[in-house]
Image (cartoon, rainbow, N blue to C red; front, side):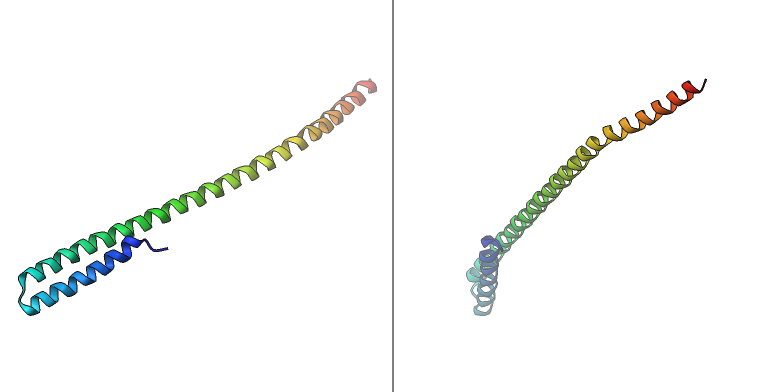
Length: 109
């Protein structure tokens, strides 16, 4: 969505440009000066609206990145938990096999 300051600023800038041209064509210095002032004011307002739009976009991007990071961290945590649950069983099997092998070696003598 476009910021309202951006739209009103562009309209004021265009209106000021037209007023300045009409003042220059009619020879009215006052109208020409007012037109240039309105044009500058409109340009500033339009740029202010552009900056607000850019800040909104960046804030949205940061929120998206944070949400992605949260989801990724949650997935890694779940995978780590699942693997940690599996590892004790594997360790017990390996320890049992090593103990069985040592028992066989001890009985041979």
